[in-house]
Image (cartoon, rainbow, N blue to C red; front, side):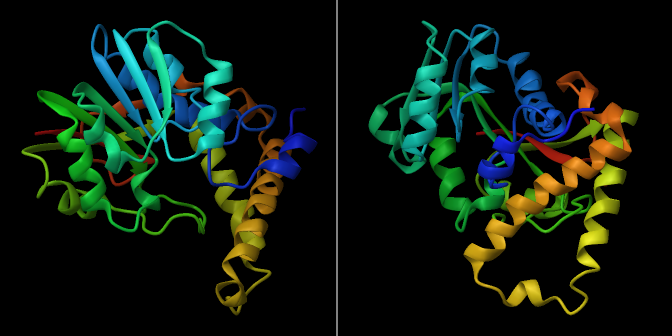
Length: 266
């Protein structure tokens, strides 16, 4: 039976998607957005804003004409550059606010699981819009607050569809909001994860965690995230075989969506 490895016990912080043994769900959910975007990026110029270690960005390069992945983390970019050396794929350590200096515009910009971390989303989104061609599209995902099963100390704000639309509409001429859904295997993982999270939260009935230093809360979050996944693996072993195709985007607003998916045009 698969479970998170000792390496993840040490290194997984919860800030970026987990990968490898025990993290099939996390990796598949992250890559499902890239799978959706890659089908819309064939033959086009693509910017992956907030590319992290690049394992999703590589998927875009399989169909796009050219892909540039940027991230503020020099460590993440160095890792991506080592791992993925493809002629039509480039990684740069770059703050999104410095995009204008590149003097480039893109047909597609992807921005997955980033906006929930940002203190000033409108400024960030305006920089993204400026990097789009007049007929380009931003494909953005973020967790749906209505279906989140745990508190993530790295998230400054999670959104409902209506709240996200309120942020996006002043900046983009057209906004379509969809939902990332999961099949029964995914739903079983979510049910079991919610049950395990509630078991842990019952150990803190007074909410003392909210009074702890932020660094300590983040440290505990990473360790408890691994513990939860280990328990889910023990209770629902079939969830360890989840793959990106177990998720799908429905082109309609759904309160029960796992992630909100926004397609934004200038």
